[in-house]
Image: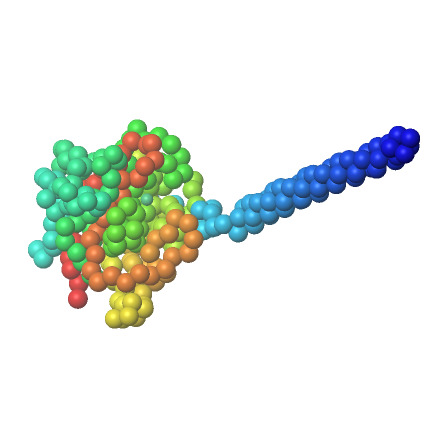
Length: 291
Ligand code: MG
């Protein structure tokens, strides 16, 4: 009887313990669930904030494009200057003996034909074997008559007045079809790319030859690498002054602001731009070294 009389009490106690245990497990799981939920929410919120911050603060190519004022169009003739007696002939229509691949310094693989050299886009940029400091440069270039594309994708190339590394490292004088081809004006033909708008637009039609005559004053650096005097460029485009002793802000940057990096002397480099338009050609390239 005694044992039998205690059974309901024991059962109730056992049931209470099980129920309490079940509640404890359940509340622990619920706590873990909410903790996990909070963690996921924090992560999602943090990454969203980071993405938002990046989208507003990450530098973009468009940040350094200038579209106004558009330089006036000037009618002009190509300057086919013959090299003076003290000029170094960099290309006279025969071969690329003075040039190498800017990437690996192997022989230049652009296409020499009919007294001109045509860009081989697949082969990449080429640069002079020689290095220069201050100089006077003459170079002629032609966008093909059948050029396609628009903006920066229409006959894009460039003359790097000092090449400071492979790819596009250096100081670029832009080459581009500027005949009725709208783009940001600090990236048109005759511009010091993304630094200086040309003073006029004397660009001729595709299929016609153009000329650049450049006076380049190389930057000078101190032994510790800081800038002593900046680079200057004066440029005549088809005989028309488009850059008047412009003081450069540093090396050309597609994204972000230019800055200087120490170098002594440097090759002159021609750009094989990756745009899909037909390749341009060059001829009659010579340079005179200056004190
Ligand atoms: Mg270019």
